[in-house]
Length: 156
Image (cartoon, rainbow, N blue to C red; front, side):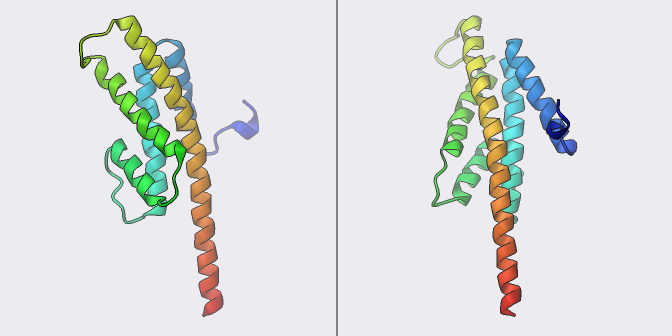
């Protein structure tokens, strides 16, 4: 790993570890672990965004509520990434809960794993995209806040 690519803080190190575990889990055909880690990253990033965008909002809620709140917070803008994450969360539920109970009858283990690997691969890409999206959105919020503060100071 190049020095410039090394994580700069504990959170970055945690994400690097999580993404490494996700990759190894997918390669090892353990997609349930990968999917659970992806949900952790996605929830953490959504929570981080919402704490900045809507500080008074309770962010100690489910992943589903976090995505709904994020979608609501950027209205009237629409973001295809957030829609994709919302859809992925439905597939994630089938993976996490489907290993024990499969609605409509049991599916063969090999087929379940194959489907779950697809969900995990998609989740890994969405988690990476969301990390970039949140960073960009938070920079824009900070910039708007600084501009607002500067305009208030000039107007005093």
